[in-house]
Length: 94
Image (tube, rainbow, N blue to C red; front, side):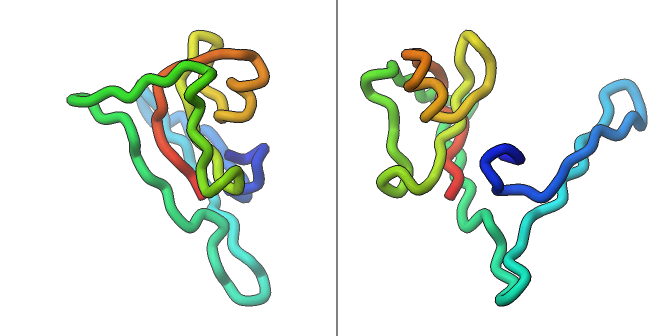
């Protein structure tokens, strides 16, 4: 999400056995509107949503991104489509 411009910065904090990730959200400096309008969870533990690369979801007609967990790692729907990979749809971001 940092590479796509949805967050300002992030850092890893070692405060125990698991650690924490601190995220700084990005805002428009003029009218103070956040960059992430909606973050919608798609897959749940009770109902996993899997797609092939031919059925790749388009979020807001291509303006948003879908985050997928693939066999090559976590990536956006556009990256997965370029590699012809399918996977589990984690969430939609727009």
